[in-house]
Image (cartoon, rainbow, N blue to C red; front, side, top):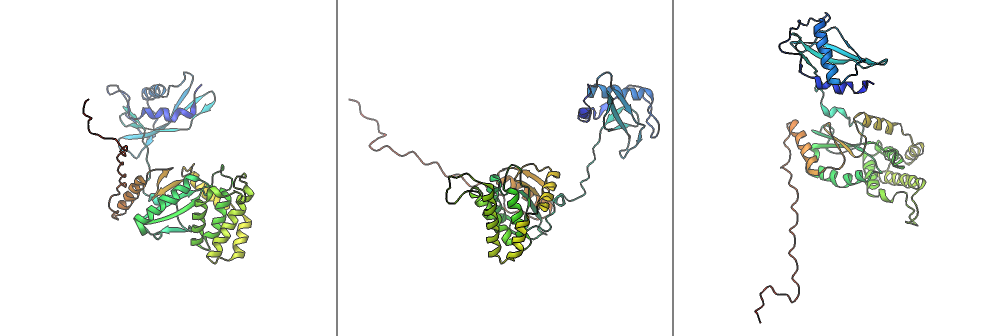
Length: 338
């Protein structure tokens, strides 16, 4: 049976395959069907490259003018047992001797514009900073907590106002209180960016304690207890920043997840399927990576913006291995013979 889903990847192997340098082939004219001999050569090649079953059918379109000089465009579809593949685009040289595939990608847009930082509480420099770092974060994710605790302070210390750092929410389904935490801290985001970051700092630093009974640390964690604790953390940070308590309470009680879902949908569209995921001027980095690698990406982004990066990063030297302690009473001198 023909596996139509696999055809595009299989047919890619036909790129720039010669139809025979010495063969008699007709010129390819846009708007006119291929000569039977040329169509046959295309079909035989594609059957071989895609390993098509004998009873499959190959349909070749009438060529059209292409953007690539010396080549015309055509599409090919494959059918078998009533199923038809999606059209697959090819280029055929004007002399009918070479079949090729050509992929065109638009790189006119600034990769930084892939993820907007508008409206999000930020750390580091202003929105106009040359490097934008967007982190898709899950407040219950232990790896996110480690990144938040160690790498982000190091980034701001090294780059100062050259980086603009924001978080977007990507609570994972397997983390029971992550959504509640995201909603709660976002209740602070508009009223007090400082309160938002203070809540994020606290939750990441104490995530292992959330849901634990403070009177019985050995008791099983519960979601209701975690929810109450998250709400209280948010209220405490709001009070510290003089946020309107009535409005904050109303937001916490409403538990509106719509903005969180929008953030999660954006992340999914960008290929995010785990946390932490970072976008550094559009360059995606997943999981735990050495800080030297992150610095390299930021340095490259700065150079692309004609901003000189800091001096090259050097990993801290490992402390020297201490010499083994001498055994009391032992001597390295040779003992004289008896």
